[in-house]
Image 1 (cartoon, helix red, strand yellow):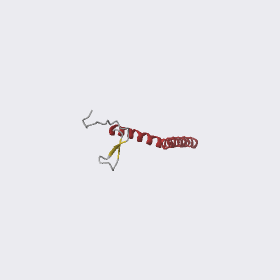
Image 2 (cartoon, one colour; image 1 turned 135 degrees about the vertical axis):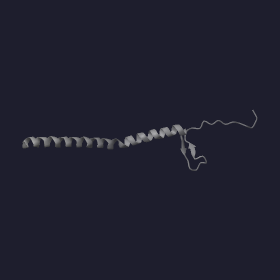
Image 3 (cartoon, rainbow, N blue to C red; image 1 turned 180 degrees about the vertical axis):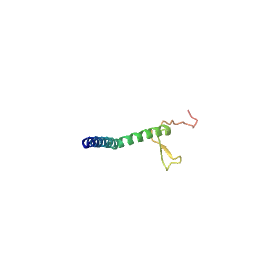
Image 4 (tube, rainbow, N blue to C red; image 1 turned 45 degrees about the vertical axis):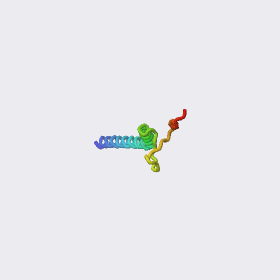
Length: 83
């Protein structure tokens, strides 16, 4: 009877060690991938913000608070009246 109880205890201990090892591997993988996931999410948030803001970034010295970082496509209009 003691042999049977010992076997059950060994199986239970092996199961606990197995689950603990699995948990440690998952946590280690998440820690290794944390910077990749954080940078990926930051890039997606920045891309979404650029879509809504047209590429404008905050500038505290500007009167509107924003300045455009892309290329300018402004056209100059001559209003002097001479052709």
